[in-house]
Image 1 (spheres, rainbow, N blue to C red):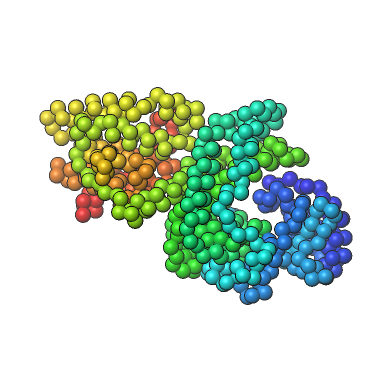
Image 2 (image 1 turned 135 degrees about the vertical axis):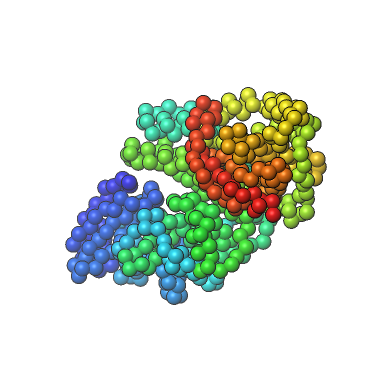
Amino acid sequence: MRDNPNISTTGISECLHTEYGLVVLNIRFLPIGYDLNAAVYEAVCSEGETYFVKVRIGEMNLAGLMTPRVLVEHGIPNILAPLKTLRGELFCRLDERVSLAVFPFIRGDNAMAEGLTDRQWREFGRTLNALHSGGFASLVEEEVLKERFDIPSAPLVLEISAQIPELQRDSPAEQRLIAYWNDNAATIRRIVERAKLLGRKVQAQSFEFVLCHSDIHFGNILVAEDGRIYLVDWDTPILAPRERDLLFIVGSMIAGRVQPRQEALFFEGYGATNVNLTALAYYRYERAIQDIGECAKSVLFDGGVSEEMKAEEVDLLISQFQPGEIIEAAMEADRQQEANRRKSEGAFRMIIREANQSDAVGMGRVLVDTFMTAHRGQIPEKDWEARKQNWTYEVSAKGWEQTLRNIANSASFQECIYVAEGAGGDIIGVSMAYIEASDGAAEVCALYVHPDCQGQGVGRGLLQAIAARLTENNIAALRIGVLETNAPARRFYEAMGGRVILKRDIEEAGHTLRGVVYGWESLEALTA
């Protein structure tokens, strides 16, 4: 809920009359939107018409008003553009520090609340394609910024990181933010450094620079009562690769999660396109850095923000780090683009084989690295750091040595372990299954692929090896548990034909985590 900035509604009404010729009968503040430097109002005028008034504290972004105006004048549908003043301008000044712009008032709600129908998803795709493919870059290039891949919010985040250890505040929301930032300072630094590296990579690549909205998440898609959609809030248009906007479609969870079916419907309207995963990873990191910096600045350094609003901003900042949210998605896209790079270079080769005791050291490295990556954010950061310090490669390797020794000494088939060996002889993946005595089904208790090698078919190969061994021993049912929030693993199991058969909590580092169990009633699909 946005705070009311207490700007004089009388002054707004007088400005609307002088600059737009509108006679305002009633005007009210609307507590919506994410821009902390803007406020919006509904103005009802004398002839019954209603307008949406956007008031900005500070300089009005002319590019953000001109861009939708150009699109509308060139016949692009579903764009909400500002009205012109009596003098033909796109905004006017209320006073020396406040400006306002006027838009048609469309009754409806944003897609965060309403969702999109199949038809609307396709229409959204067609509209964004018209924006990207319409050749508008040349029409707006004098006003609209061009992408430089330089992480504009990074200096702010690094400055806050330098100041925050010494800050002492009385506000509960500020104290909470300071504590969380300090606990996650290392992660924040790594995100910024990784984004800078990816920025340098994409700077060296060749892209078509198109006109992008740059913030086209669910909250900026207005769904009208008549079913039409409108792309709104053109505050930061940019000339950039189309991935700048596709960020909000491809596996997006910004202001609402885009499901695979919805993504497919969008591209039915947009048309087939090859998404550059390096650019996508860069933009996901950039978005997270932007949100982290803006939230922290608002809570810690901007005056006049209520405690309630500060608490909401802290919630937003913390949400970036949660499983399945944008930081995890950025890391996933980052891993995928690295895997694709290796694949395109022909550098990735592997073999799947049964494990032996000499593999224990490599298996320990895979288990520790993969487990710690997957569980970050699932348990408190302090507990995660303690686990990282105490659970070394050597500790894990000793556990694997004992397990492999027990299997070698067993007279009957109860367990099996397979490893994936990379081209250089390193162990890059591990899988293990055992027979559950209660019902004779097999359960996979370990399926780990090193984060540097994911997306290459390693997990598939390891699971198939397990399934083949079980089939040889006349075991037909298989199941595997996974954290409920581990979206990449869940997508993998579902792609392999697994179905959720029950929910089961997982105990980890003294914390109870929610989990689900996937099952296969037949192993034929896995061994085919």
